[in-house]
Image (cartoon, rainbow over all chains, first blue to last red; front, side, top):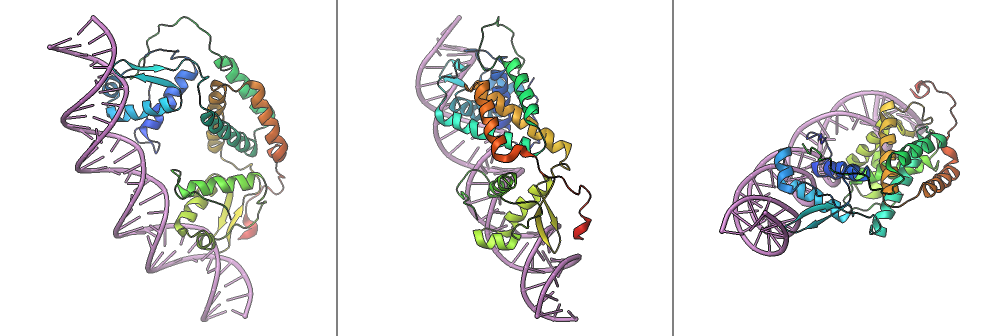
Length: 139
Length: 139
DNA sequence: TAACTGTATTAGTATCGTTAGTACAGTTAA
DNA sequence: TTAACTGTACTAACGATACTAATACAGTTA
């Protein structure tokens, strides 16, 4: 599930952030679901707990999870409380990605197809409550 | 020439790469137009020539410019010779950006509007594709 | 109480971005 | 040819940051 590239130029904690964001967006991890503890995950992945903590802190500041001292870290349910600042950042990223894709030869239609795919896959960013319960393997 | 944030977390050379890509995509810098030499630009911006060189090297590897020893660096005309690898990278970036935007509350329509804007502004990212041979003209 | 959870702090190592200086090779104009 | 430009390569040094490591404190839960 979690295949990290320890030799990558990209910091481990950033890879973790991306992976978790992906799982949360795909609803593999559902609202209020508990994430593995920093120590547990660190043990399973044989990396330092501080690195996990850094990833969790980043995820929390981006509005994807929330942490409760003594209890754990959990998936943030609604994306309504996302800061305007974060939203603007993402819009800028999106604009840059679209511009570059167009420049490199993608057509408007190609991008629309991609958009269709993703809307299909994620339910258009709208959460629906399916049956949960599948424990993920975080190693 | 442009304004860099020397205190930013983002490396100077990456800021340079982004700026140049933007100028090239907007056709402010046109095909085969000469870029400032590494030394000149370094002097103008009071940063080290090596940093400029690193940016130029990156731009070249991404297919945005080409460099000729003794002559200079120039805007790459067609985007047809972009490597498949680069194209895939950009597609992945685009998918990630779309997913995140949807998750953070943007609707399909919002993204389509953004797409319209950019297509409008850049002319759909379609460049004239004249001589698609090698660059032997300059050697 | 015991064992779990998040969180904070300090310290050491490794990597990377940047500067600096030098050097070599190709182009161009005087 | 010479001089001044161009890209390119290399080594060395410094600072910032990513990561590891060890420890400690605070809150939760059985």
